[in-house]
Length: 425
Image (cartoon, rainbow, N blue to C red; front, side, top):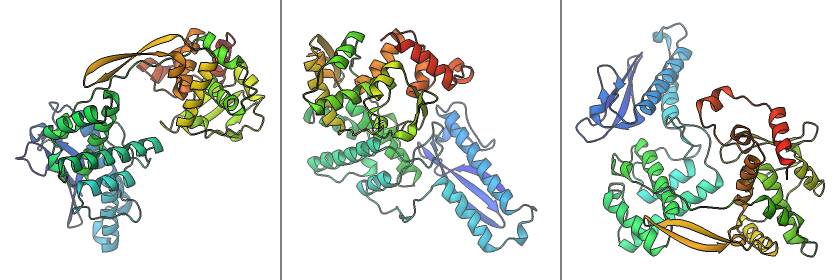
């Protein structure tokens, strides 16, 4: 068997990199998912040149593909003699390679060449699986929130193209499209830059996916820029948290329940979506921890049962949490914050069309479920916990080499350090 990579269209500004596998008198040609400028490919050495900005990711992908194909070859030819292989085995080997490079969900279409951009976007939403930073395909589907964003972007693209009186094609996703779509989202829809950034990121993910599927060979979208700056958000002070905790809500069971969920979030550092999926099975009272896997990052997290958390859980003996929808919950939180007297003025900034804007709010107006998570982190730091310990609870990625490879914190250490810190509440 011989594996060779080569440029599909070497005379174009960018080209897909194809793979040729010579095997048992046959040739298997398939796209690798790598697209680069021809000048960055060294055909003789079969490597990506160091001049390519994406060299590391591209080279790792090619190495992973080579390793997979070689392993698949060894499985079907343990003796090394390909002459004894049946056409059925050879066909299965070929299909295995194609499935690895471009997996199809059961029942999905295999011929996508006739799809319009909008139809392809629908296929993308239905079948896309998350990629690693190196571009490797995983079997993990995006979360519900991400899929909701993808559907929103698809809807906005259809509305924008309808306003323009045209049918959007892959070739139209260029600089002119970018300027027009960005302006429409900002000026007509009134979206701030951080929200538009999510639209642009989604379009880039979709365009990369569709190019790997062979639907186009454009590259202008690779240079679309987005402003990832977000406005400031708040975290509660210790005094504000205590005011919410001690607020008498006995006359309003709905607000009382919402307050308890908010406190549970604050004491554990969980995302609201993870909190709503908690059940009795996640609680280990003997070890004094809550174990769960973050739905957003698929990271295993451990939340210590601190003294404030244990006191709160006494009111929730069944460990079943009935969560309102996020929007409804945020409305309740604002009512709770107002009743608790969180009326201090707060200046909040945001960016729109590249310009910084400021608005003044009372702090209760800024209360959302995410404030609970920020409050956990902020107060944990104030109470003396380190970032390494906090990230073990929240599931945030390690920052540096030391934290990533050398600081290994077991459950007991995390539990003891966080519990000690939160005794200061």
